[in-house]
Structures are given as C-alpha cells and as structure tokens.
Length: 443
Image (tube, rainbow, N blue to C red; front, top):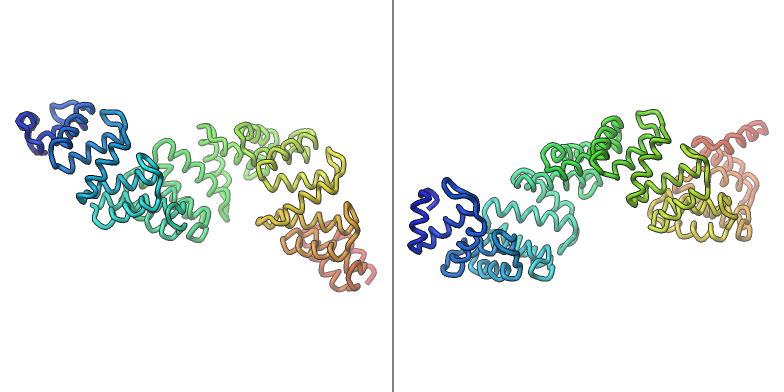
C-alpha cells in the first residue's frame, strides 16, 4: 500500500480494506503528497483498525497514540491493555513500550525488574532500531542501579553501542553519560580528556538543553584536568552562565577568587558567588563565608561568615562544619566555646573525606594538648596528631615534633622530633622552620 497513490488508498479504505485504512492513518499522521497532517483523523483510523481487525501494527499504533496523546487524550491504562495484547502475540515494539511504562510507572506501578525483562526480550528478537532503544534503556538502568545492581561496565558497553547506532537524542544522551563516567571515574579510569571528547560531541550536536549541560561539563573537564586550561574553562562557563546556569556562576567565582589564568578579582568573584548562592547553591554560600572570614573582597566580618557557614552546614556541607568548629575554637564572632568545637570536630572525624577528618583530628589533638575544654592529655593528643598527619594535615607534624622534643607523653627523642619538624617545614610551617633554626644552633 505504501507505493500506491493517495486516491487509490482512499478508495480502498472506503471499500473496507483494513490495510488501506492503516496506510491512510499513517499518511494522515505524517502528511503525504495530497494529504495534510491530521492527527485526530489518524487516531480515528488507527482505532478503527484496532477495533475491527487483527492487524497488530494497527493495534500498536492505536495504543501508541493513546500513550503519547496523539490525536486524542492520553490514556495510559487503555494503552497498556492494548500493548499487553500485542506483546502476547509476539509484537516486539509493544514489549519495548511495556518496558518503558514499567520503567517510568505510567499506567502501571513502577517496576524496574519487569521493565528489564521487556527490554531484554526486545534485544533478543527486535529490529536493529528496537534493539538499540532497549540497550539505551538498559544502559540507564545499570548506570543508576534501577532493577539491577549498579554496573558501570555494563552501562558503558550499552552506551557505546547507542552513541553509534542510536537516534540523535540517544547518541547525545549516551555520549553525555559516557562523559560523566570518564569525568567521575565510574567503571573506567578517570580521564578528563576522554570526558571532554564526549561532552564536546553533545555540545556541538545536542538540542539546546543538551548543549548547555554538556558545555558546562566541558568547562569542568578543562578546569579539573591534570593540565588545566582555565582560559577555555572560563569561556565555557561564561557561555552557559549567560544562558542562566548558576552552577557556572559558582565556577566563575572560583576562577576569579583564585586567579586561574586571570588576575584575582575578589569583587567579581563575590558577584558570581552571590548570584549562585541566591539560587540555593551551598558551595557559593561556603565561599562567601570564606571571603567574609578572611576579609577578601569585603570587610572581615566573622558574624556574616558564620551565617553563611551555618546555612551550608545545616544542609550537610562538611567544609562549612569545619569552619564553624574553628570559629567556636578561636572565638571569632562568637564567644569561645570549646565544647561546641569538640562536638563539631568529633562528628567530622568520621568523614570519608580525609581532608575534613584531618582538620578535625588536628583541632581535637590541639585541645587535648593544651587542655582546652578537656583535661590535658598528651597521649591522646599524640594519637590524634598522628591521625591528622596521616590525613595530610601537615601542621600536626610540628606538634608531634614538640611532643618528642619535650618528652610530653612520650620518651624524649630529639632525632624523631627533628624528623617531624622537617616534615612540617617542608610543607611550609613557619613554626617548624623557627624551631629547626634553634635546633641546629643548639647542635
């Protein structure tokens, strides 16, 4: 029927030929030589074929229109019933759609396990196009651990197929997911250059939203690469920030705050951080706290800094909690409160991020060393300083040197003390450098 004229198809449809009615529905759906697009009429014709004949493709298209609201109101329940009938007859396209419905919970309760079964069945007996669609969905399932255990390796295998054989949308989304995998080191070795390649594909070929999302990730890949290109990163962030991406505003704030291939500009950094913080970005709130704490780009204001840190810490940001612990320890903007500091730092010792647990152990060690908020306990101080040093808090080495130099809680060991002082001095500790001068003068 596809090669027949409009006149012939219309005549055959009027004569009750259901193959012709199905073809006429297709032409009304998409438009043809002398037939204008008419989705409502297409739906009526598909319904007639579905109700009055055994043409599975007609029943499938009737359900497909119901599912997508093409020429009629959406009706997930009715669509599901028709897809189930077609699937029982072996229709692969209907199996795929049932996978989609179970995956998203449309017309049925969300059920990833059932969705997975339908997608795998589609791969077993579907066309190349249908197989590719199902592989893309299975890639998402393995990436996110939906209905299966997370398996980035399997996700990667599926996405690599759909970057080549998928629709334009699937190619872009699969490239984006592969970019994320290389960017975060999920299932693959972290590789910012490979991530950059995938994100650039999407930035060049995606729809407007895909392009902006990918361009932002292009900026991040340039920024965090082993050999960063801050200029290209800044160009990417400016492009997406102007389009309304406030995460890019935060990154631009960092670039100007730290002077990444530009002159440090705290005022410009503050503008970007405030723009991002206004949308609820906690990283920007933290950086504004740092600026007020250190008086960079603004007058030093510990109280204002504490407000920003409180906001970020109340939402779980450990860097902000660490700064609050220091505020209470030193009494900056508040009365000194060692108990509050101990409470905060004790919580942070369990952090999976070693830089925060290192800071926390150092300050807890310092309080035990000085007898601040607790009884002086050199043995406990040494244990905590050692833990802080192991987590790369280098100033802890200076205090370990002092413990061994003065035999506080340990046997005197000037050689070991010197080793600790040298470790701290190598990392820039002025205190350690001063002590070493005295040590060399004495010896």
